[in-house]
Image (cartoon, rainbow, N blue to C red; front, side):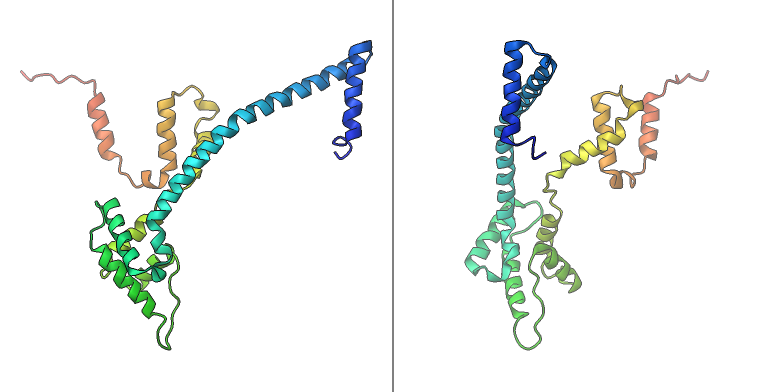
Length: 230
């Protein structure tokens, strides 16, 4: 591998190529193979050059989405260090963003929770302070404080269940390998998408009762005719 990447080796190959063109030597086959290899890698590089700008733009869009999401929940990572004014502004922003789930009371709850967390480090009986949303939610449940901070608990659950990742497409392709196998090569795209969704959400699918669905389907597809009794 070191020899093949050396300057000597590359210059000799070019020399062989030039001589083969000029003299028509018996190494013509080797020259054609070299040209074919060079053409292949040139095409690969052209494709890479085309893909890189698109990939960069996509990664930039994803990065902006992650930053926007993180800014909404950033206060949960350093709750005890934020000043009260900023905490109230953040609470108001969160209540507007998640108005279907969170009430305006979250502002007072965040201020109260901040004081509560700071008090954990006072006196001789100091305890570990939760440092991120996951440990904070776990701490609230262990101390049974959900009723005192109901909106904060909802906010923490929203954050901890956000499906923010780049693995959804990879997961779909992994499922597709199991679904569209040798015996299912002719199924249409709509059915493939449906089967993939059922497979990805397998845990939820297994909890569904299909009896009512089967009955509705049987009634809709029934070909029996109803005859009047004379």
